[in-house]
Length: 373
Image 1 (cartoon, rainbow, N blue to C red):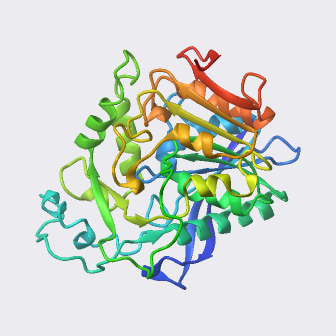
Image 2 (cartoon, rainbow, N blue to C red; image 1 turned 135 degrees about the vertical axis):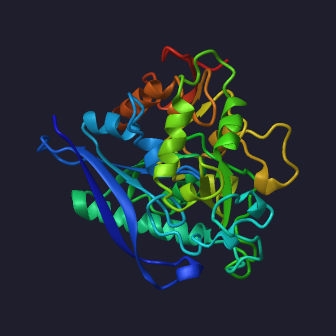
């Protein structure tokens, strides 16, 4: 077995308002066993709002690389960064004045001499249309590269905003959908804003202290986070942000794109019976994840999230949901990570969970499944 890593620069004409109609190159990493001469079975992995794709899915530390686990199982694994994230272009994000004005005072002592001020580009950066356009470009690249009609999707967190509607609109290109800790507002808006771009600022910043504290709040179980894993994960995030890593304290800041979203809600999830029909769906989340299930409900429907309501909204019968014990939103780096890898391998091969194509399950820390009460 020879797992080979290839980094691609996929040509794309940007539809992000900040660099619209400009030729850009989207970052895509591929990992596959080149000794396997059989048909290539592609899987595309997409990041969420704040963690670049390599830090989340290809963490080069012990057994944490999900992409490597799938490549060893015979899948041709592709991972992409949307614009504004990781190693893809980040238009307008190199200027610290485009940080959320409320956060600009945190940019000390770096960059040297920086003085807070109004954004040089006073708009939110990316949007649902530009994200789905970029996803489509990469899907078409993979279809041509692997000579296949369909690609299996794996998305973490806010990737659901892009992969969910795309699968509904393009069932001829998507073989299955695995959503890990999906963000889903049942009553979110269906329609784009009247005009784009939307006023605001292009990015937020996040630091290591907040990263650690937010994760710790969802990790109450003994051993849920291995010793040193916070440092490893943060260093991987910083390795994919050469500019943000030079800002603020010595540990740097993670630059997080500010995006406008629409079209992912109960209406979309049910449309045409595609999800759970021609596109089978597996939903997986952690029992301690406070981000995907807002409790008490948020009065703002755009920020009121529910994983069980996503399962209920999927109209087709081929749908499954698994809740993982002792897991939070960052479960790709937690004790359950190997069980997630194994669950995804079984899903990609059989499109079943515990021999079933429909139902709700719990998984303990040993990987044992049982029907949810």
